[in-house]
Image 1 (cartoon, rainbow, N blue to C red):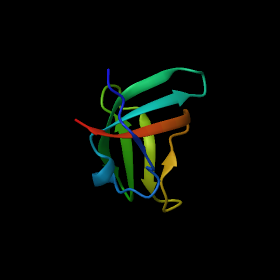
Image 2: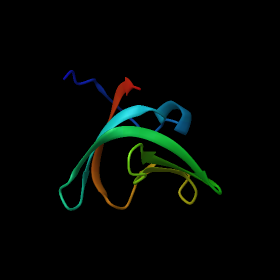
Image 3: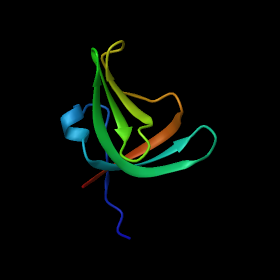
Length: 82
């Protein structure tokens, strides 16, 4: 398996993140390796994993910045897209 270069996901828009592969670790130690998908909910955009729809990155209100979902400890977003 080839691993792609990591990117800084914090300044990116939902459209720039959509379809990108990510690897995340939850607070319980589980690892999620999937691709990001866009979901618009009111003023917020939520990037979820493609398979289980777990919130990965929250974009917009209330902080107007990109933040990790509550269940995640860390994330690596890769240049690679589907």
